[in-house]
Length: 196
Image (cartoon, rainbow, N blue to C red; front, side):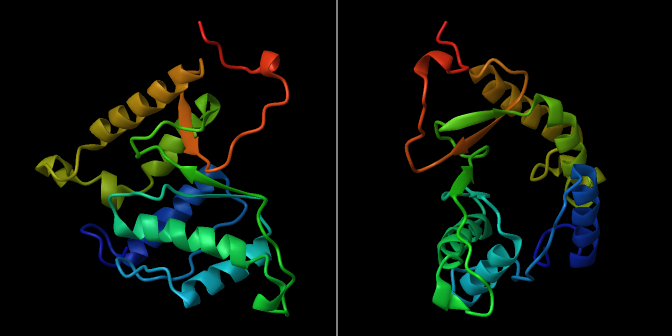
């Protein structure tokens, strides 16, 4: 966040750590890639691939491939490529290879039809609490300047989005995701979403 309009890298780091505590994350790290200079390079892909090998995730959730902020879509491209590279044995023979089983795209801010929606009703308040740990971005009195909405407005917008996606699956709140592959359904009769 060193190029961000609000806050400092130290403030943003403290906010990220607080948000991680709210979410009760088992792991959070930052590879130190520079703000607004993120590009899909061999160095960044390999560094992230090594982190993927170390953590061994089954599923990787990355930003949707089109985004307003260039860092977001570049981060998604780096993460996708690194997820593949992490499974190549010869990338670095000192660490065992690991390739995630699935890559999922977070599409909340993309105007696309989701592949699926997750019911987040039980986690919605914690999600909002974690978001508002970022006071340098959302809690400033100058938020009403036009560029940055007020915190209450942000909460209303996010709740409206979550309600919209929740409504699609018969839940109070939902979060949309996109996958590039077809989704397997073993029993069409047991599908949990109603038509009528």
